[in-house]
Length: 280
Length: 342
Image 1 (cartoon, each protein chain N blue to C red):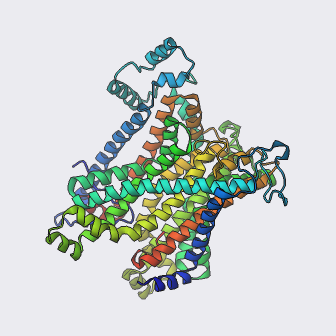
Image 2 (cartoon, each protein chain N blue to C red):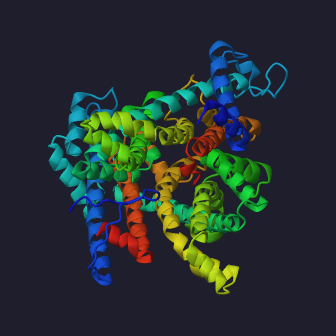
Image 3 (cartoon, each protein chain N blue to C red):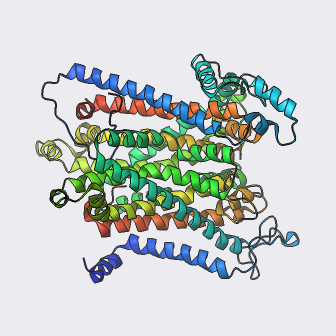
């Protein structure tokens, strides 16, 4: 498919367009926070705490006088950071395991796939809570835990689709021509499972943002003075009677980011491979 | 064979046909294989849970007492906890105790862990059941509704709502429910649990918002699964045949379509149970419910590691057990699944 036709079809896909806009906004917010925020996100200004939205503070201030807009912008950064690294960990190890399972087959495949099934019994969040209990709370450990939970998901997708590719004529022909299993996996299987992996990565990115928010809300993820949407919500909850609005903004930010990524993922699935058409 | 391939929803299995099977011993064989897998999974899970807390940097007794403890008190606690014994001895003592119903002693509460967990389960188990009930009722109704109106405005509305449900974190939804129903309208308590002795009405009243927060958000995924499973079945020839022979739309749906769409729905429900358990931990935190999740947190804060170990093991065992029963139920409904494993 030529690029022109891809974009022509993409423009007609409403969900994809909305998702792309939301994700672009998320990235823009994070990028903007690197160079400019209305106030320093971590600046404590107790005399100006719990202010109503005004021209000086567009969305008001929180219980310590933090500017809410500045915190929201800086929070986007943590969300993206966690998403990229956690999905990266899942992709690198998951795809490797999936390729090995599909290429080698037999007992190795059974062992890898049973291990993957087994990890599904471990709720990812419970795994994260346990890891942070052992290693200590913090963003790095939260990312590690979310990343580990991503590995079996990418392994399953890669192996299931990889087996399909290996059964195709061109993969057989490559084998007959004397190509080794590693070369076949990298030259034939990987490019053919890549579209599905991109779609899955988008969705896991959204799940990673949700998980980071939950862990930070519980006090196991981002630590003060790091701005994080989840942590903003846990602070806001203590002042729910005084300033209920504080409990609204970070949640909207999380929901918009996740909605954007999910729509983008569904849209990409439709555009990249009609055979994978949205099933979720 | 120890490793039996467990096909999950969505993966396309290589169907192996065994030509001389008989229905009865097929189900028996499946049950046996699945049971062995259950035991193996549980054993493996216990090793992982034990192992994760075992790789704890430093001495567990030191971690529990904090940096200021003297070496003598650390050694004394280490001896009391049996930490001066080998890894295998400790694992055997722990798992042997759990199997006998003896969960050990809580360091922070200085009481047996078994009754402690039972007390918390009296909150967490009803919460999980209530949430699952809400999820199932909402998702089946919305999924069937949407599938019957494919592409029409009702379908679009349900799919849009479920897309929002996928994006909203359950703990934020919980906070919003508190804002609306507890802070604004003062219809329900904003948190806490009066205990079952305060009366069924008040106890359930304290659980209804948490259960809604958990159940409604979970329903988003299940609605989509229900809809797509039903759409798959509705495209089958036997549905057209049923309609052609004069069966009403409603009768076709209930007698032919839904039973055939049931296995993917059940499978996803089983997988969702793991999310539900994890979600319950967070939602209990929002509502300050004295459930199992709260016990885990308090124990982490208290460095009461044996309690954490027991709670996590129990939660994982529940998830594994639920998925075992889901697989059995699916095999009972759909004979093709039995043949696949056998």
